[in-house]
Amino acid sequence: MIEFSLDRSSGVSTYLQLVHQVKQALRLGTLRPGDQLPTAREVVEKLAINPNTVLKAYRELEREGLVEGRPGQGTFVLQSIAGATLADHTRLRRSLEGWVREAQEAGLDLDDLRALFNVVVTDAMKEGVA
Image (tube, rainbow, N blue to C red):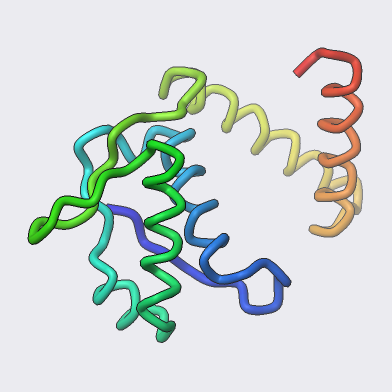
């Protein structure tokens, strides 16, 4: 089951943070079709947020066809959005971890890493590489 967390300083609305976390878990294969999302009550208790915020996030995921609410049972994943296999994710993650270590050894901090990664991804998308 997914464990939600919030970054209250991110500037991203709470419901969107929940939506993004579910989508990330679907992409990485940590959530799969048939898996149940935490109940709204569980999320509210853990994160101390308004129940309507959780319901709004779950409605957005339903609208996108990713989850389904079942009365009296909960909210369940309908489909994955993973583009690669779990083995591919593992291999690529290890490669990226090596790159991060190398960048840290070169003196880059977290903000530098994010900026460099974003530039490379943006450029690759423009060139049709990614």
